[in-house]
Length: 261
Image (cartoon, rainbow, N blue to C red; front, side, top):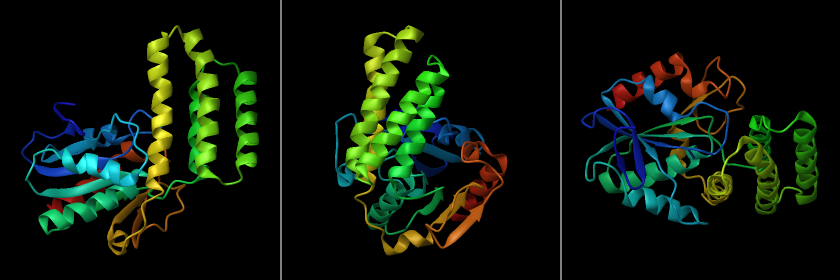
């Protein structure tokens, strides 16, 4: 990171090239490559900025969008492209709609494994977080997994209720792991707060309704992603975890954005 605005961090580029925005929730404990990995593989002529979640406890999608729009980097300059990963793809598409109204030219939209978040999203990410807590032994991790599975059955598809219950599971598991790792209370509270903020981010994304132009975006999918979010799709022989660090994916993104900018 070489520079920052309030709502965006620069990931790559020298500040003079095509302005590219990328939306994902950084620091969500997921064990997957991020836009930071992708930016390292992109040329300097692409000035890549990553969305920073608002510090306030927001609950509505329009509040997230307003935060990012009000703090756009290189104010007044044309946005060439908007990227989005997973649930960030929903936000990215909505941002592109708003940016198009401002600059009268639609930025190129490139989405990676896009989709509106659902209960499966929450389960995948919680189990991934539990798996990364190496301070817990396997029996302890399994007990937390079983607790999460029971909660999922009880919530029966209620996303908001499941998010709240999963936060409780994450907090209880984290307290044990952080204590064994020697992580101080204040730092541990901050890390646990990140997971709660992530679930709010997912919940808000579910409020965004699909718009007609979203199908025109390019979806770049991993081999294990179902697809179907847009009309333009391409899949790569890469896992979900490695999608954003794949040189082949970076080459495809570079080619797409070079043409559009």
